[in-house]
Length: 143
Image 1 (tube, helix red, strand yellow):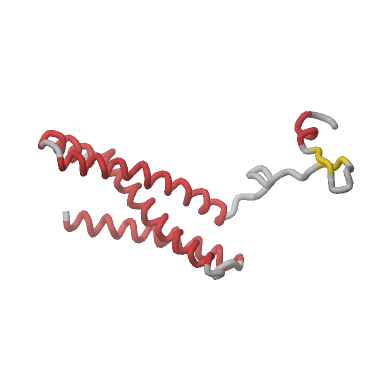
Image 2: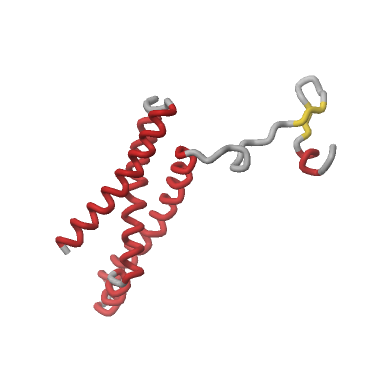
């Protein structure tokens, strides 16, 4: 054994002989692909949706509270930072929804071929951008 990391990879096989276990797959071994990036982004958007929901809860609680509370919440949400957070929350919601549908298709055994997987990933990204912008354009025109 040369060093501590290689010592940690040592184990006995079923015959009792010492063998070096292989490294677990990690980001230094695998080249990033669209599937892995979208999987990681799916997890980030799930967390972002949870955090963004706190903004919605604050707004609802303020609406049930006093006029001053509501004015403060509405003022923040209407500010450039609040609008940016709402835009990112909308994008996360759309992405998480569309990628969730993609995962449901996988659960049904569909789309596991590599070309299909890449195509569905690109479709999710493009549809997320288009739908998020469409939601905001419609929302701003009506607002």
